[in-house]
Amino acid sequence: MSSSAFLLLDLEPINTIGINVLEPLLKTQGLNVTTGTNILDVPEGTRLLFIETSSQDAWGKLKEQLVNLRVKCDIVLFNLDENPELANRALLSGIRGVFYTTDNADVLMKGIRLLLEDQLWYRRDIMCNALNRMLQFNKDALHKLTDGDIEPVKLTKREKAIISLMSNGSKNKEIAEALSISPHTVKTHLYSAFRKTKCRNRIELLSWAQQNIPDEIR
Image 1 (tube, helix red, strand yellow):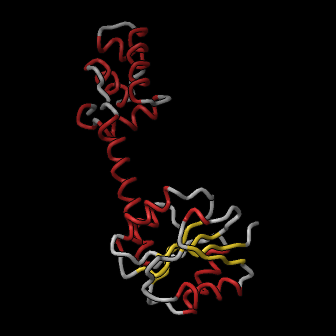
Image 2 (cartoon, rainbow, N blue to C red):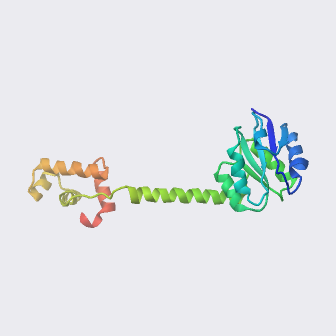
Image 3 (cartoon, one colour):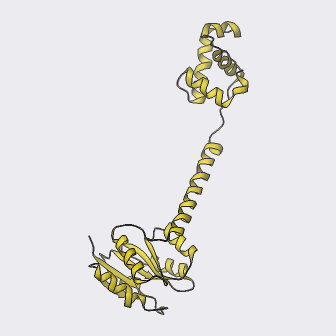
């Protein structure tokens, strides 16, 4: 497993946390740390890439940098201002963690250790927000799947009549006599109802009918 980290520093950093605090902390965890201002300088074998993200158009600049990244590694942002939307975008884009300008050495160390354990490092409110977004997406997708994409089951009048008689305990022969059709025709209609409702037997079909067309089988 690679044991190196690269600090991609801003050309005009808002502070020296990268060099004075973050780099020494990473070294205490046995990481070989190098720094630079060009993402093309990130060497092969880098495990953690820390990108200073303190400019006004932080997300736009970050996207430009990542387009030129040629190394597969875990990405972490640091020196962020209080920007929840940027942190949300980072999490949903697969970035492993975020450190803020207000984070002290203890917070940085705790985050570094978790990142080295292949965990994420985000504030709880950011994690909850991202989770809620994914849950809403899944809810909308499920609603579309169940209510939009699947055609409603349409039984014929004859099929409903057979199910209604069957719900009263009538056998195929009795149903045939009541409807003046042959027992074979009763079976044909039943098989059609099984196929449309995806039921495997009479019990499942009656249960489906009670849930979906209760007024039509009374």
